[in-house]
Image (cartoon, rainbow, N blue to C red; front, top):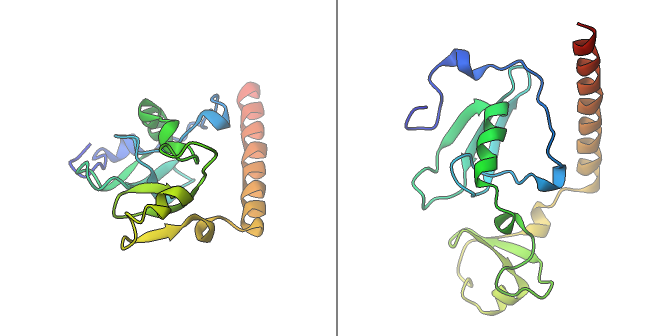
Amino acid sequence: MTEFGIYNNEDSLYDETPLNFETKNNEIYYNCSECSSSIEIESINEKNNIINFKCSNKESNHSKTFKMPLKKYLEEMKKYNNRKSNSDECEIHKKNNKYVSYCFNCNRHLCQECLKTRIHINHIKNEIIEMAPKNEELHIIKEIINDYKINIDKLMKKKKIN
């Protein structure tokens, strides 16, 4: 891997082996492959099973773009899986306070109680409700997931036959 998080050996990038998802969906927290910070997926090459993503952690000095095989990413990101950082409940104000905003200055989620402190009053923030997917988008994603499940089943049957 280079200093930019990109693999140099192009041959090692392409992995046409079907991905095997043995972990339960609710136990997977998608994060950076080098820390527990969230990621921004820039692209996924389905043909070659390659993911390009950017780490959102600006303080760790690796806020850069990564390019790696999906299989490798799934293995690497498990090392830094952190349920606490992927929870939607406030760590400070526990009592069922769900996050409603994200502060880019502090690089953390905020609940209603956090906002009431006015610590983040002049910070750059995003309201989570504005970024939440619409029902139509969720429906499309579910259809894509179902298509992938069908393709995986077909590939598994084909593999058994061969």
